[in-house]
Length: 275
Image (tube, rainbow, N blue to C red; front, side):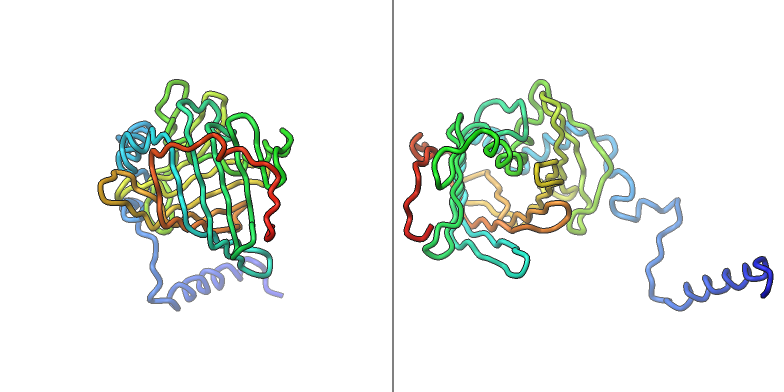
């Protein structure tokens, strides 16, 4: 057997041959041209995290986005199960917002989410400001906390410039291939939420946070608006847990600022024939 030192020139030659074998390969640029690699270095480094959040607020709808009072979203939801995709063809969320949000990942305000697959009730969940409900009525506290821990987080960006919040700019990323500012928010309770704001138009395209189900990410795209409203809505929201896509909420319509009766957010046991 040859001494190991004799193999070194051969290995170097092999590496050179591999590189030469792919003449169409795109090689990284030299260090001094690193700005030609999107998101390799900070874009617009003079901007602070607070600056970018303020610009994201303006892009999403300005004051209406920050303090919408209420929101209703309707559309459908594609659930990615282990061996099939399930479609909830009627998917609706009603939301009444609170003025303050000291903890980004606990329930606040009021919310109701319901889904149907055909005539069958697929999901029903609500929070009235104190209690959480599902199709069986009021839930106990422990299960309710775990449920909302995996659902609340995006709304944190509305309160991100309030007193007691911090906005730390972290390394830029590519989200869906687009250069994106990344901002780590810390709420007054110490909770962390990571947001992505697209560099090109300041659209909010990413949120990530810890949940009882693991690291949760949402990616936002297919934005649309309605005549006469400054509100810009993400039409497609992809939800991931620990890197695996769980479902896609497709929103096709929205209503802002409507008044809803308290009874909408209180659920008695449902005796629906399809449930």
